[in-house]
Length: 198
Image 1 (tube, rainbow, N blue to C red):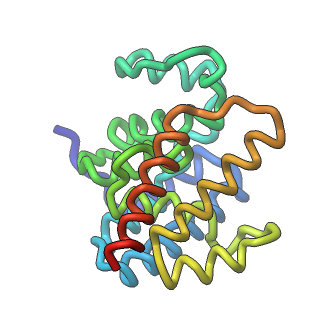
Image 2 (image 1 turned 45 degrees about the vertical axis):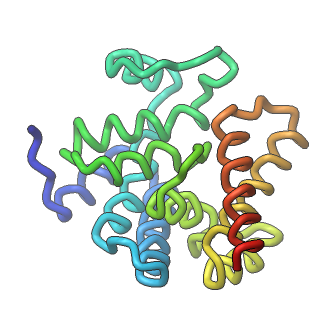
């Protein structure tokens, strides 16, 4: 079993894997994840680490990502889902384990699904998915509404972010990953049942 790298070493190593902008984004996601973890009662240490490392594979080429995934026995799916944007989460979980020594399944899951989402997202999965969307360096129309929703109702905010992602994918004629559809349907079902029960 790999020993988890000391956090100070992680920062040095992470800087070698990405450019300045991506590194600043990673620090922003780390801080936002900590804030959301404190707000919703998640493990702050896990949120901090998952937020920091969520994009650790982003600097790899598409072919490097494919190679890493195949070596790890990950099923890639059809070619249309083998883009860097969709692969870097799954490959990030591999890098987090192999390079940074992270073994915690909750952290690895949150890194793995931070782009596509998935069915049955755990609390940490939702926090990292959302922190990636609303960290302080993000600036797009509607981000303030998302930030406000994130402080009021985590599930509602994740649904808003999923809706935005799906709309963007459809508007730009890209392939919509099946896991994103599953995440949307699952979160909507949960949210509606909470609203009815509440």
